[in-house]
Length: 155
Image 1: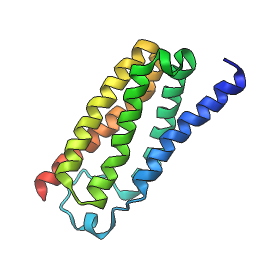
Image 2 (image 1 turned 180 degrees about the horizontal axis):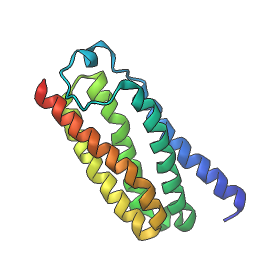
Image 3 (image 1 turned 90 degrees about the vertical axis):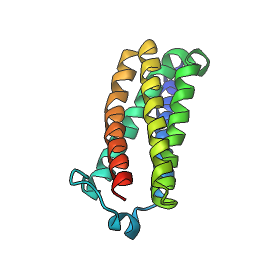
């Protein structure tokens, strides 16, 4: 693979991740979210636009590491899982903030966490560095899952 192709691939994977973030960010929390009962361990709103870009960057680099070594065909399972979980990631914001479907969003985020875990395991078989780059995302979505559950149970 040519050097230029590698770097275009890196930019592409990062762009795909950030596009998922943009799709999710099109729906803002708004007054509905502010009025919900939330646990005391809910992070302040300013945390989200700080954490998510870092996670999307790490995710894009992880996918790129696997892709550059094996190509899409050589790592089809891991990269397909990656793209599916990315879709669920973008869908969550629409379910939770847009449609106010807390329980459906909870089902989505549980499935999302499972797919992130499987993606991380698949990436580990291809490139251990890629798997480690997915760990912060796995942990953050685990925390977000607990938060979604708590909000669901309190409302």
